Image (cartoon, rainbow, N blue to C red):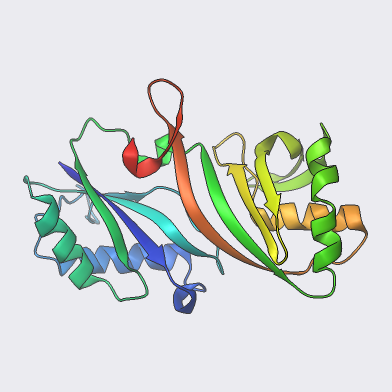
Length: 222
């Protein structure tokens, strides 16, 4: 049995790295009293995985951690134990119990929704470029990868992009082969406008995957 836990990351912890978050959760689950499954080998640790790493400086209301249990547990008991072990800046928002055959969250993620608020003199010029960006078929960008930088067409990876007075909402691809981060999107819009990128406050709203019929669904519903 596994527990899929959706949690948030509040502004006070936005500069905690993903690696530090992993280490914190390893310690936190030990305090829950739950029957946590442990890995084998020289350095055993709780068996857990995240849906998608959140970049440093971002906040979120849809982070997912998947924790393997060594014995069946009720959802309410699991939720109460996890909530008690975490600080208020990592709020537990939803818990779902799944069996071991359920796909890992990382394998399910296809897209993510973000809220991006822009600050600075160049923000209006950047927002004005959104219709032109969405009208293009190709927007060339340099993306950092594990092996260096490579040229990509960023446009097909931006599924939805809706501006307002202070920023925009975006639905972006988030797979191993196709992904674009909101800060790169801001940089591309600024380049189109011929201005310096404004300060961007990025908040993840949701992780999405596809159900058996190919329909997009929030990850916790798959």
